[in-house]
Length: 237
Image 1 (cartoon, rainbow, N blue to C red):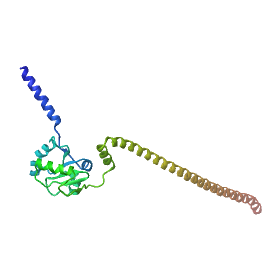
Image 2: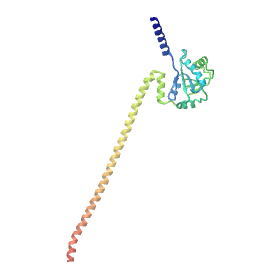
Image 3: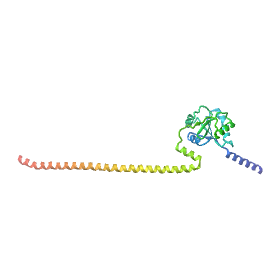
Image 4: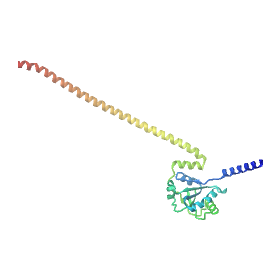
């Protein structure tokens, strides 16, 4: 009975090691595509879930990803997803499955039978600088700034530190630019406010002068009226 438990324990440990060492096929989307193919080397499968040939390739793709001799990445793109339509258009995907190998910023369309041997040979020739087919430029627009930094971090740990420093530097520049703009705007605002105050004071002085002249004229008219009235009254009597 004790030996059976030891056997079960041994099998469980073996299975855990196997599952830990198993590699998964990378699922690429429009958000990760450009960074993935620009800064990594490996195969990428353009497939449709409903495609019968794609379903047959699935076991082969898993086998390639878990091959101990394969040091490059094995990935795939679901071409039926709306978010990936730009990838399909830019790569001129017209049939499924379509297999390409990406390396050093280029794509190479795989033209042979879908078998492990030819796939590995095709990749080895590209990695050794002897591609069997013409290279295609990676399409999909210019890399975004965040994607560019992510790619650099994958190339070397040095860039991970540099990107943090660069980000901090850009943040400081942004703050300085904002401060300068605010100072300039504040100075212009103060100047405009002073001019406006002067205009208001000038308008007030002009209004007070007009009111003062109006009161003086009204007072003079009143005095004349009061002086004339008794004489007229006396004459009437």
